[in-house]
Image: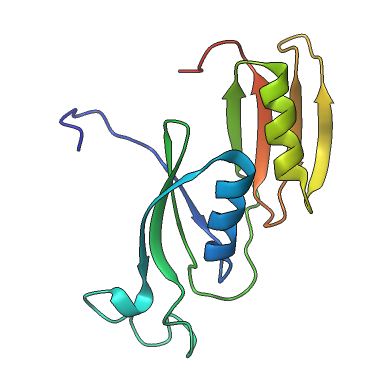
Length: 147
């Protein structure tokens, strides 16, 4: 736990019933390291009535995973079956064009390429893709981590 008094901002993704599938996809596709996973049935307090549908007790209440050094948190949310990631994009900064190709192609599997990986004035490789869950990603070769 950080002792810094500086706030931290983390992405929190609600997969609306597909969180476990998403975790496995990110682990396989881009090397995500899965930390803790807590299911609704493991919660010390039951969810409020009407929060999740009957039969969703084994769905993910909360999880944390890392992509590189970045912590991302996720859940099955209210288990509606309709995740929506409108207006949010996750950006991955990589060091080489080969890494960019690997990450981009893996995330594009069953997804939708929004902008193919191309050379731009700001990067030798930049592209945008929505993965099969609808999460938007930008892949950029920056040569150094963005801060």
